[in-house]
Length: 379
Image (cartoon, rainbow, N blue to C red; front, side, top):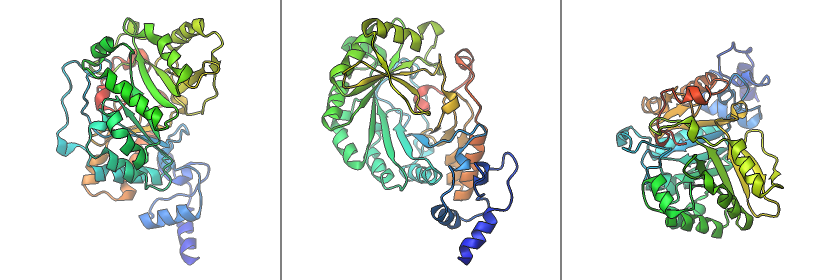
């Protein structure tokens, strides 16, 4: 009791000024500055407190969802994701190791993250991806491990991924026409992707999420074909508005808006049902009546969802991005390698989250901003 009283006394020493990151920044929760790692963990375990203020920004958004890019490499060259000539890859020594990834994941989970998504590049070309998932599964408090893949290696690896603890699966697929797939991805592989989706259904993933970036003049004529897939299969097809990133030659005229897509689909299915969604969901969900699956729309450009954003990103080279469309980054890798303490890392992360803006700059301004290609962000 004496130890608990001493710790509690230190935690309740006044409310910090704006910009000071502590648990008292949220709903009157106690402060944790100056505590050792052991004291923080012990107090949090014994005294449940509101969500970590280190992961809560100045607009009250609680970031419980972390996306981690495992690699910058990819076995495709999708037009909306990277320049045709490819990108300059970061030297291997400057990328996060598996132990560094797990150390950061553990820290974020301790602060309240309960969902981690592994991305790339293409995460399934990283040799230790199964081992990383197995180690993440051991983190107390982590509820969901998700993965976004282009599906090329999915069928072969999915049984091991499922055994390791993979909960949620997103597969990128922008066309149902093999020749068009090769044009968009600049590589072959359509049949491997379809095989991977079938394997996921076979292994019980429900729904299997299929991400489709819609681009005018390229694949907007396939909207109805994609929706039809959801009638008899447990798929959630998510149509994503085309977004601007370095090297993808974004043009407003190529973007098909959510409303235009919805209007087109309703001509075929006028009784399309809108489904309730969680506050932090990025997807506007709909369902064709009596179908097994559903349809979603990611409206980053036409109707942004910045006000409910709960996501943070760590790039393959260890930079923390608090906004997909922002160009501000903080190198957690450098702090890790300089032997920063857990407390220092938490303060650095909290400061970055605290600088997060209310919303992104809008589609036209974003297209003029300097940012990484999507392949180097882990989108």
